[in-house]
Image (cartoon, rainbow, N blue to C red):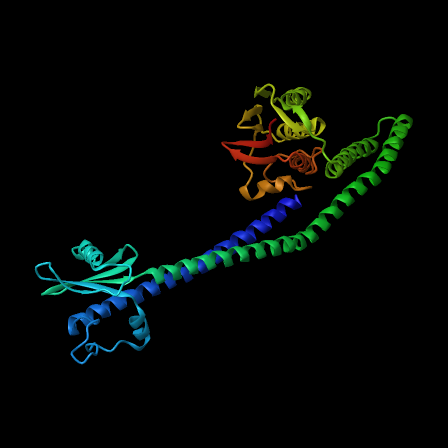
Length: 411
């Protein structure tokens, strides 16, 4: 039980941290990518502006100096100067007017072919073959400017790589810390649970002796004084106490024992437990329907404990039925044995269904209770047995019926 709780705690921490890191890194990555893209677009726009106002920025005048261009913004000056920019200008007839190519890997012909492929695109800007481009259409010429994205892509890849490395390392550290923390979080609960188990076991043993003494003395008094109203009350309450002690002992035994699992015919176990209850059900005007119990459904389990589990569910269904049949079914579905015990009954509120499996919990306001020998331990014992078999026990309400289900792995 506590192992599952630790797993849930660790899983919750890991999911939260994964989402937090993914969100943080995602924002950083998207923001960085957008900022770098905007800088590239701004560089291309400025190049087109310079070309439109002053001619090819790569050309020099008769004095050997670069042609005048509008002063760049201080933040973009270095980015504009170091960016690898290439351009092809076409006149109004579509002929090459001017080429600015400082690339050592891209020939003028290749650059011209690349420019022609994007010149008539509807989009003014875009990306092609590792370059960001801008198409600036003027009245007497069309300028296609390219910006080498190799450094940009390298930066993005580097950012992504280190993000993944840092993220994975962070999650590993968080996982180790969560394992340690979950142990400390669970420890007080585990200590409390162990104390409760020890109390139940000790109380059960300590109460056996006085109950036995009371029973013996009551029998002696009965033989001496005969029928007596007060003595009958003592005997009745003593019998109820005896049943409670037996349930406490069964619960303590289930908690302590290491379940020895072996191949068990669950079908035979279910049928074997139904038969003794038929007479009990008949006295209450209830019929047990078990036509849907399949043959030869084998599970890896303990036959005595599984018998007790089935017995508890059938007894619970008969005790709290509001009339009609009690239905028991057992099916083999996709490697799992599905046992269901269904009775007619009042609907149990959703928020209280899980509480039915807590020790000493009784839902008097939603279930019939005639003051019989039920102390809120039966379903708790059933859940302990299901957990010991790595199974699952559930309760559901539908169309005026209460459905208890148990799922176990088949062999």
